[in-house]
Amino acid sequence: MSVLHSKGRVLDMSQPVVMGILNATPDSFYNKGHNNNADSLLRVAAQMLKDGAAILDIGGASTKPGQELLTADEELVRIMPVIEAIHKIFPDAWLSVDTYNARTAKEAVNAGVSIVNDVSSGGIDKDMLKTVSQLGVPYIAMHMQGTPKTMQINPEYDDVVKEVHAYLRNICDDCDAAGIKELIIDPGFGFGKTVAHNFALLRSLNSFRILAKPILAGLSRKSMICKPLKVNPEHALNGTTALNMVALQQGANILRVHDVKEAMEVIKLHHQLSMSA
Image (cartoon, rainbow, N blue to C red; front, side, top):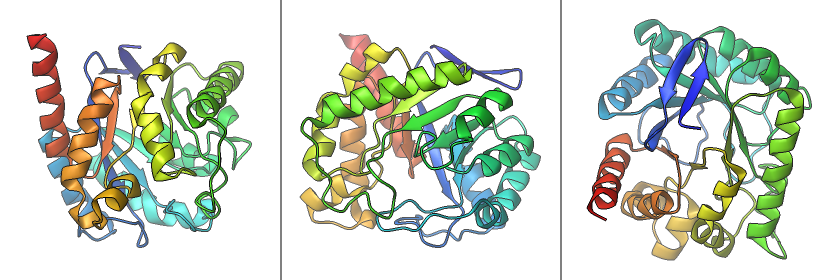
């Protein structure tokens, strides 16, 4: 899939693109020092677009380990002012909503969002796949073992690559059966995985290309970087940049990041490396 289609618009995916993270939540594991209100996030969005972000991913529910699920009502209070403010000032920007609630997805798309990004792949809200199909927008389906509250309580796999691959293959079938036309897959780095599991997935990310879907890599400032380097998320940019290059070499199509400028530089250097081959 070299393009995405949504609401009569086309997003060029012939080269890797950057998705900028906009957390409209007070309890994310990292927010880059900005507030979670609409005015602050509008300024962050403007800078991300200037730096080259192709997509802005707006979420109102933290999915860090141990987090309780949020209701759609709570999410919508947080994200709707942000979506409306960004869509008003940047009507051509591609916006994604990061949610596991079908009602949140529907109201966000009606307010200007072009993509639904669901960490649970419809596992939390059974109406999600039907809703996305009716909305007619691209869908990002991610692998997660358990829920945010339970996912990091001793995650276990016999073979993490095979099991995540099988899960995503089944999700592809489920989305096809539901009538979802365009699907992006995400192996879910950090969602129910140890550091070893995450690196095994990264080493084998190229194998997921057999599913013939764009691949999203969300590595930004996560524990798979922080733990080996013995740093906190605030000091994990260098590690993020290093692993983003590996993800591109392994076939990632979308880098989901807090730091757009640096991710764009990685993409440019990866492109130069490819041209020099």
